[in-house]
Length: 280
Image 1 (spheres, rainbow, N blue to C red):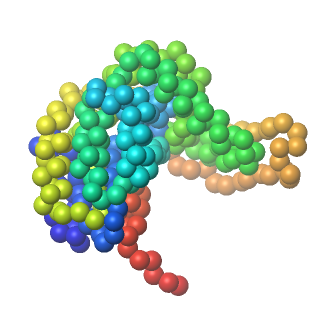
Image 2 (tube, one colour):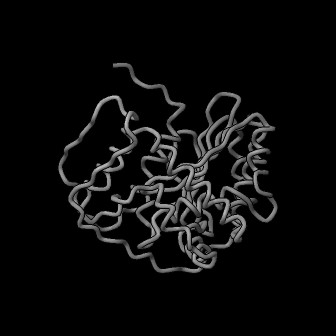
């Protein structure tokens, strides 16, 4: 793969991957799953977010918190991103640690620990992530606009989810959703930074090529909402001024978009960070 190419390659198990070397001392790895908030089953808003936290949390050979400690000890950083169209794991480390990160990401992709104890931890993390933006009263307005701005499109629910819809979720449902939505054949691996392309190609084939693709599963049914308005309020004194918003109704859900369009925002923003921006 040449440095100028942004067309992904496909492994026999269906995993798409692309690499772009850039000058510097660091390397970044991003794993993007073609699954987002819009794919949450009816009555289970936040399922994608929850499963993403489970994938990021622990695996067969990585204890809870071990991945984050591994990255921190190497002088790197890691995080997750949940969107209506995709779910992503991202890690940045010194370039000489790249092979270790690729092994760890392949381990998290192939052997996530989906057990009742890790489910309880992920459920609590999701609740905290949902509550954090609500500390800002104006962020609650943005959420209200999103929920009332769409007619029947699943974007209406947002990507973070509703903890109340997940509190009675059993581990079997989580495992079934993971098998249908978080397989290697629904993932895109993006690597950028200071590395040798031939070495990266060998590592990708070695660590990710042996991951087995999951059995095909039917997609989840999406809920339909007919709400026309929503209000949001908080304790007195939390907002210095009242705020309101008005806008056109978004169109209803249409046919699913092709995978390359679903990943366009994630892929373009990540791969092109090293490119200089044109001045106006």
